[in-house]
Image (spheres, rainbow, N blue to C red):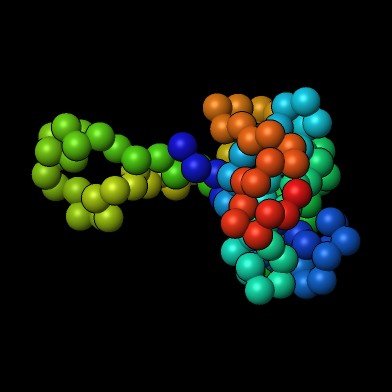
Length: 128
């Protein structure tokens, strides 16, 4: 399962505002998530406190008036694809479009199966 955040850079003290980036790992001992920044020219991957990341999901988007948030992407198995011959969407993703309230606890949001040692080389840039 993969998680992509729509977050406010301003809340995190960065330049710009609305931004999308995937989460690459969660480090439970420090309660930090590895953000694989999609604007690599501007910010290489970086660790952020989960509570601060959660706060960055709260500001309303100017275009929609709704809070930012996240989406989860997971692959469907080959057998599932064969069973659903009518599926015309990209065959490698299961698409579900539900708007839900964010959980009260940030840890309920972040996948716990992903882990990365703090200070290890999780990114090709060596960012920590």
